[in-house]
Length: 395
Length: 169
Image 1 (cartoon, one colour):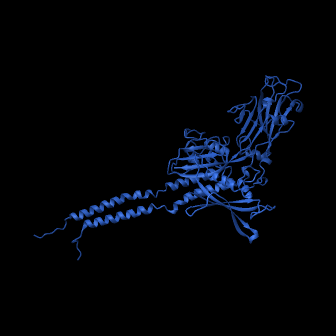
Image 2 (cartoon, helix red, strand yellow):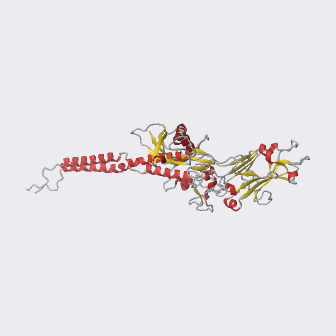
Image 3 (cartoon, one colour):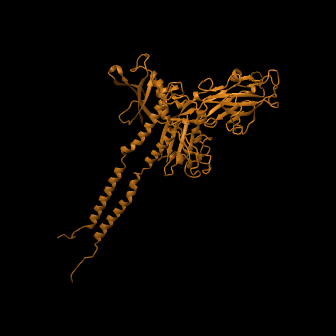
């Protein structure tokens, strides 16, 4: 019998092959974990944070249609004034966030843009067309990208004791981060108090105007002077930082101390009647754009809600907080550089009586000429820049 | 004629496994090295912060004043620069401060010395050591000042370059 061991598998070979296969499988299963160290997340997060930081700090943003629910591209707004609730009433009119005053003024933020941007939160309904909600509305307009990033954007302005933020709590590790040093443009505002009124605008319209049925107080915006070009400023390059532009900035006019103005009148007479606010091209015009039913910007006697319709009774003060582009749009200002905002106070027997021979003394600019809203610091508190820190964290 | 007589399969299997394991170990170690390519993120963050701080310092707070940086350079006010600059780069929106260090120099053209570039130290809060890894940020400014520094005489505005080296511990 011939001995033939062909086809036999030796125990030696079996052991060797098993050891090889086991080691091979172990190494093969290690390969995916090798690539963990090479994942691009941390680099990507930092890049997205950087991009978002640039968009927010250096870009003025854009108004216009945005895709996605609940908007689906419906908007007729355009330009970079996305923060105005007048020109961009719903969030569907905001195409891109951006907080800079203009594209020529990087790192200088607009206060209105800041306020509207940080008005959103996680509890707002994403399908609501007005209020911004975290995260959907922000992803589409500031973060971008297909990956559903989570983020926290915060801003602290020097002199404020709160930090504004939108987003979630930042995780301990593994997030992208950028910090920008910024300034915030605080818009101009004018305060017309009783001292100024007594000095200049306290008139007897019986004598001055021959008309004691109403008192008119006019504020003059000289568009030619306000929109003077960059060469009129000492700092030519960044003139937008210091410009008063009623079409782009909030205009705040506080009239205070009206209760001290009643001359020799019975103590029961403590209110007057604001019947209308005219916007016209002349201080005496009785026609023009009348805001009887659109007084979303008129606050009376410290009330935190604006008066709905005029006429309304006034005791001591009036605040006009005119949002950008609301009353005076850019086209209005360019076509009619001289704009007069006139407040008309009606004197009725029931409210303010002409009760003596001196006639009716009240706030009235007929004799002195209108109050000038201009670059004179004694009239108007000029725009100022306040420094702050903006942080973006993305994960 | 080659045959398999005397071949030790087990020893071969063990050596093949060892080769694979050693190779895998080498590969794992190689990828965990902190490559210089990743440091650009930290450098970028520092650069953005430093140039932001200089730019903000070179922006006047209202339409009629000089910028803080311009005033500092004109008056050689090292302590104001130190306070303001460190405030800007170290401030955060939350609690706690960052811990950055810097040296700041002013570079300018010296017309009286054959049109060469001179520079002098404006301020610093620490001397740089060999282990520090700084980034360089600059800002051009216009100052009403004699350069090289000396008693003031009515001269036209001069351009100067504020050059800051910024690093984190």
